[in-house]
Structure formats: C-alpha cells, structure tokens
Length: 487
Image (tube, rainbow, N blue to C red):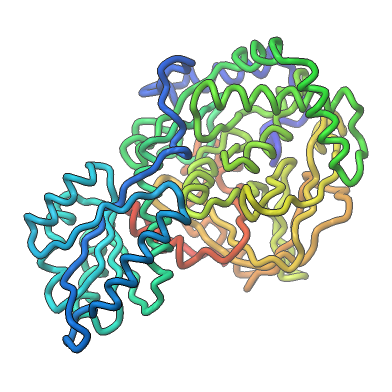
C-alpha cells in the first residue's frame, strides 16, 4: 500500500521522528556508508565489466565430439557482436586445457570477473573448471549439442553449492543471454543504493552487512535535509520547464494544480542531482507520504526508472534489490506495487502511485499517463497514472531475504481509463489459478515473522514486461538463490 503504515498525511516533523526511530533501532546503522559528494566512483551502470571466457579445443571439421573450426569462428564472432550489443561487457578470452591455464586466465580477467566456459571435447570441462569451482566464481557453461559429454556436470556442481548454470543449446544467441546474466554479480559489487529511512522488508535485505556479503552493494543512508538543500538551490527555469513537460505530455491533468506539479518537478530535478552527486545506482524512500509538504517523489521515481535507475517506494529493500538485479540483467525497469486478487476473474491486480513510462527499457516507447492527485491523501500532490499495455505478458517477482525469488506470470488484461479505487496506476493481470494463489501467496516463506514491516513485505511485488522465468532460474543459480512459484 502506498503509505501502508499511515492513514493520513504526516508533517515533516513527524516524518523525521519516524525515520530517526528506525535508524536508532539499529536496522540499518551498522555498516552504512556515509553520504558524501566527494571522491565517489562512477556509477556502475556506466562501467564495463569483464567476463573470463574459457575456450576449449578447436577441432577439424570431421573431428568427433569437438566444436569444429567453422563453429569456433562463429562463436568468436558472436562474442565480438555481444560486446558491441551490450556495451558494458568485455570478454577476456583464451584457449585453456588445464587447471593452471584456467587459473591464469581468471587472474588476468580480475577477481570480480564472472566465468563463461564454452565446452568442447569429452572431459575438457571437468578438467578446466576446478579453479572456477574452488574460487566459487559465478559461472555459466555453454554446451553446443554434440560437443562433448560434460554438459551433465554443471547441475551437479550447482547442487554442491557452486554458483554455476548451464546453457545447452544449438542457438548461439544463448551466449548473449548468458553474458547479460553474468554481468549482474560484478555490477552489483560496484553499486551504491541510497536510502531515505525508514527501511522495510525482510531482515537480511535490510541489513547492509548481509547485503554487502551477498550482493556486494553498498547502502548509503541520506538525510531528508539533503534533498531540501538541493531543492532550495534549483534553477527555477529548469523547474518550470520540467513542470511544462509533465503537463504537456500528459493525456489529461485531473486533480493536481500547477503548483502541485511544480513541487513534484522540483523533486525530479533534486533526485537527478542527488544521484549524480552520489554516483548512485538506485534509491528508495521510506515514509513517502511525509514528503507532501515539499512534494511527493512519485514523478521523480518515474523519471529515474525511465533512465535505468531503480527507484523504490516505502523503503522496500526487497523490491530495491529485485529492481537492481533486473535492471542489470535485462535493462528493464519494474512496476512495484500492492497486489490484490479477484478469483471471479481469475486475476491479480497490481496498484501503486508511481511507475515507469518506458517499461520496454530506456530506448523504448513511453506509455501514456494521466496526472493525478495521490489517492491516499485526499487527492493532494501530483502523481502519474500510467496506462500500461493491455495484452502484454508479464513476470511478477520479488527477491526476498537475499535468497529467494518469488515468481508468477500473467498477461495484462485490463488497465482502467481512470482509476477510482486504490492507488492510481493499476493493471489487472490474468493468472493461471487465482484461487490457488490465495493459498500460495508468499511461497510459504513470507509472514509476520520475516520482515521489519510484515504487511509491506508480504504485499509488494515488482512487475516486469516479458516472461523472465527461465532467466530468473539462471540468475538464481549465479547468485546462490532459489526460485519459488506463487500460484
């Protein structure tokens, strides 16, 4: 729920008192990096990551159980193409035939590099993988059918606890799919996520030390006054231009006054500046409804998500990590929201007061939107009601407790022309079995004992365009997680 712990708007003093209480309780204080503007690294989204690529024997055209010469040339060409397509991946490639040669190539690629092993020949993979397994590097194995028998081993290595996944296919396009997923662990290690208290979510996801150990990301706590200071220094012409853009590009402006949109536009520019100053990759705001006095961050979150920067409501740390993993893997923003079930229509609704316009990615077409007042504070403020694509297949997911993906799929069947109940942006998705979903919601691992804010922890999921179930299973293998189906 937008502001699920509030029945009405609260003033700034109450907001700050609540935020301070959570910090004082110690949920996020240990291990937090201090917010600072100086000497910060470039954002991870702008960096190139390395993938250590192990190649086996290159056999002649008539050689049995090896990749033949022509196929090897095609693979090398495809790797060059992938580097160009993705832009932020560099393959460090070498022909290796022993554990020592594998270890040397891994050292050349760097300690954070994931591993892509392109299997060739009987026994080659089991001969070169020991250093990868010993280092517990995230690794993907690509096995072309008929190129040896070693495709059988990666699933067993995964069962032993190693972060390994297998792509066994005659489609060289699977190499790009593997590369997209292999870039996720090193990008997470380079990432900074900004938090305006309070935090909410499962205990592990709200513990910066556990986050650092599991995902490698830093959590940076930012005081509310930081945004106030930025707002006070904004260029007013830029604010008016942003305001005009929101109003002119909307299908309709319903409740908000121009001043409401001005205040929200200030937040857009303030968060842009904050992200750049902190060289941050994501942000989440707790106690969002307490921001009404200065302007809600809802429009700002829409802008950030459209730029490829996850921006998460209500301090929901599980949703934050979900959005970051998907952004790095698939270059897609998510629609985080509250879920409710309609068994009569075999459907699941998702609703919130912000959402990305460019759900196909930063280069995709923007959805239409209405400018609305926030539904939970009597229509005050300015938020988007995004009109998402009917007929679009979707994945609904959440990465909880740093170890489990909750996943379900569906198709967007309905989007209101103008919402009259619940949060502003809404979609109704047809699901496999809504009745069963009422019994399996949370997958048996979410409940009142699993989170700092159990209602929000249980309620929120993140919706993405497309069916990503298979990719989530591969990603789970690479970050030592599991997948639980809801519904």
